[in-house]
Length: 349
Image (tube, rainbow, N blue to C red):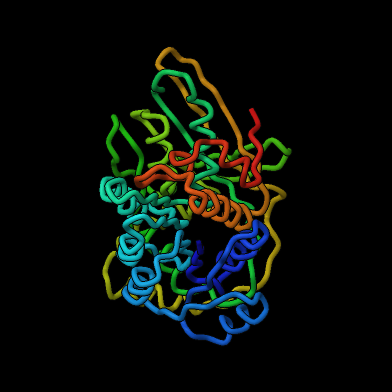
């Protein structure tokens, strides 16, 4: 049985491929024809499938029926749904989507995937799992809480090169979506960048965080059932000036011509290599129950992109072994909070 890695030449794709090979898995590289893909195939000795665009990738999947498809292409819009559906029936799919558009879209395929005997896992990366797993751990064996707050603090080293259209689109779409939080059990609008605070991390370092419309919010609500949920991240600017500017920027970028222009310009930005801003990545949650009881927990992990690759490789390997349950899930919902430790994390309380 083969595991196909889409976008195998990208940073996450390369790392997932390496992690799967270390596990002895049968990996196939999938991407558009390029010198980078040829070089990767030559250096690993792996088979390559040339397919560019969601429809062509989906056609190749339907023809060859891989056991698992790992989508690291990014820009998880309708294309991810097309590719995931191509895995049905019987095949499995996972991606690292982390926004409030793509993740709900994949989760909406639950009944379809369950009927087909397939498992779809979305959000198989740092932010969603690192926070979802802590919430699930804190809520084990307890009644539904009243409130949950999660914070994702990734330690990410920057690689030199172009920012790329997938990451640029993700950044722009966060601004366009604007702030979100759960109030009275419903996803409602809030001001992006609110809820700013300084977290004192267990290793003695600090991180500034503020709210963002990320899939951590949805995963935490589903893991807890809490009617009030807030999700914050260290990736969102937390200064008062930036918090004032972000809503206006979002309204302007909602205009499609401006959005396309901004994505094009941002994609071409040349980034310089930079070390991680902190020693560890952290997932954090504070859960409060109606009687006033509060519990706090942390997940410590290494470099954020490495952890993401470890999560995706661990999920792919489990799916290849037939350990998934049919349906569509976030990672801890599919395999439990201990998936985070299997991927290299450590729970702290």
